Image 1: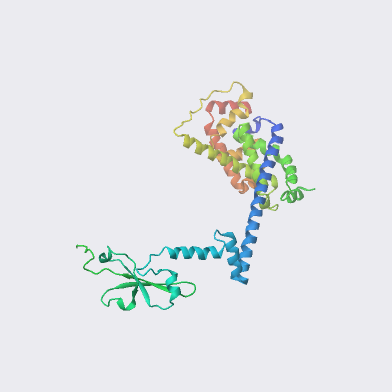
Image 2: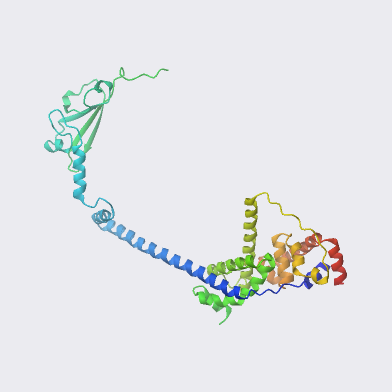
Length: 176
Length: 185
């Protein structure tokens, strides 16, 4: 084929890159070294993270309290005393009853019995009055529906929150 | 030290890779330049070729193909990537129509026999055809070497080359073919 002969005889350019070859070589070397350094840095970070994680897991297995200590050292609330103080201030924010008795953990501290109950009315009838009051269990009416929630603290002291469910008369009916 | 030893060493030592670079740079550079016809682009592509070769050297297995063929294979892939990127960029620019080059007959034999002249027509062929033509006629590679580079059987390469030449003949202007026939005979 003539085209083959023609292509065989075509003069190819004999361009030598000259100094570019050396420059390219050093550019490539720089790129490779930079990449390797980045990989090494990442590997070091991963290595240390793994050691910490391993320590945490091992301490969890040996004794969970150690893990708790590690957790406290790495989290914001470090002091357990501070945490209990925080819980107390939360209790202080609960409203006082008519007798001036705290509805928080103080109430339960005095009596561990389930003698007092705090009903919270959600119905329209209690709109004007205070939403919290202390009442005896016997004061609960038989024909009124309530939602009772029991909350225990770590000393097994409990407090009950009673929500009175509004009666059908007060509830707005949806016409259909 | 044999090439195999150098390659083994270069897998973890960059200074050993320099020896391979020095040995094969010119070959690869010439091939890339013949395909892209621009020194700046050739520099960029060759840089990418050797960077990839260094990074993927651990994947190279001596038994399948020679190292030079492996480098050529990377170069072919990088050239394809370059043209793909260029196509995308042209699409992003949008609506740019490249005007067909007007045929101007070569003044003398030297001009029609120059690579610059024939490259305009080779450029119009598909990538694979361009690779085979450049490797066969300008790099003077054997069919076995081309088959190692492309990763296909020799028979397949012969078929591709035959078809590529037919296509090239069709793209060349009649005047040029007649002129070439006359001068070659």
